[in-house]
Image (cartoon, rainbow over all chains, first blue to last red; front, side, top):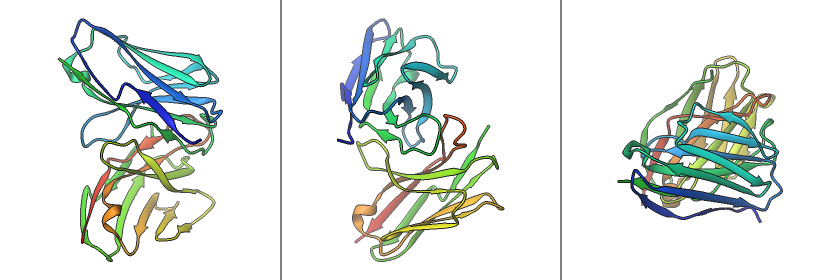
Length: 114
Length: 112
């Protein structure tokens, strides 16, 4: 099983809402990632978790709060977002964070902030 | 930090033609170079990768070449098919670190 699953597929939220994005992998990978992708742009790294610990935060605003409850799950908690946060949010995993390991991407959550 | 430039931004070819996408990286310490294909509504998927100790790698219709001196690497697709139509991203990484840096992407359109 080389699949990364993400829920929900689509999410519309107001600027005062609180919502969460979920990501799951069962490949035994020890690194998990959140990326943000705007239309016609490359994925932009937000967070890296290595062995369930946050190892990289790319200066992401605090209205995005990541969480890694266990080695298979990754959440992204959203609060008080802005319309410019509307984007495709991609989760990925790899065997390790360092090294030349393939990153497996999920299909993404399309987020619209109204 | 690493910066990866990618050209062209769009590429239109006829079915059966070859397609070439080129990338340049800035950090000479980068030593891992994957290529990802992203189809509409999907996440990026690895199609081929190359490490700095290798100059060329081939997998059926896809090949990647690396010139470490010039800090260039390229993706070559031969005998293109309509299903090759997608956005392609190159990327670069120093394997001692955790961050993968993506190029700006190339939209490839293969016309029947």
